[in-house]
Image 1 (tube, one colour):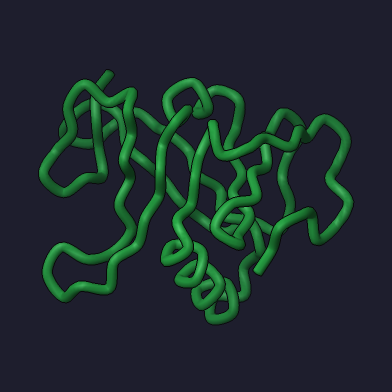
Image 2: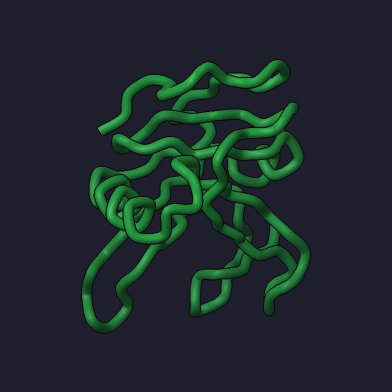
Length: 125
């Protein structure tokens, strides 16, 4: 599991903490499995984009390196990357993972969301 940078971070990239985003241990374990399988990068980029049934959507993808202006958080044994605009909406969020057959998968628990859709992939503030 990862508790500190695995490589030197590029200029303009800050290190944040779990006050921005917290990954549970189960989310971190699943991310390690996916990183090994997908082989697309060791950082999980979490972003907020417009869209979805409630106005804002969570987007996740693996990246090889953070970009200038990003914030890297080491949590749950994994590395999450959040851009500065998304950080405004994500602050205080917990990312969990469940392997239940019904209702399983990654789940965001965002204290900033005034409402969210039943699928949990979009929200409004």
